[in-house]
Image (cartoon, rainbow, N blue to C red; front, top):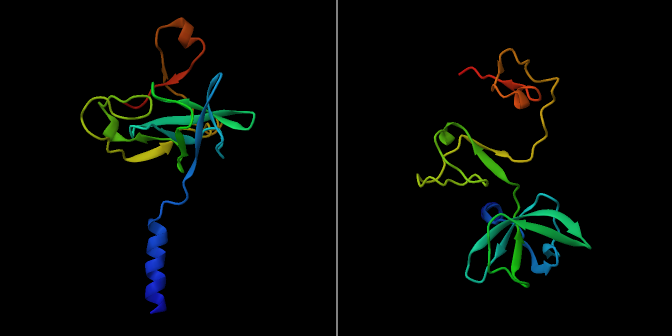
Length: 159
């Protein structure tokens, strides 16, 4: 009996999405801000009264307020709107499912061909690979533009 109840409670806890961290939007003289416990790079949603969600990112702090940069145009933004911090970091899809697809800056499809079926997702903000651990560039890719070729060394892939 106790084991069955414990298993049921475990399923309920696993299904719960955790605590929702939210605040109210303030319109500052130089942008959007809210009193949100967040870090630079955290993803947020600004909830408009019509139900639309405007994606935004925490880009800094001013006088204890998190400064937000919205990713979409939103003409209805005003002081007092709810801002919700998302628990996950921004990811982008990668894999063969992206070939021939047209995406916006947030990795969403623009071509009307339905959702992307990525092989996997990667964090947008990752540490750069060490230049000493990367493979040596054996066959450079030459663009023919001296301004580019003199400063950047691009690697030609196997295809």
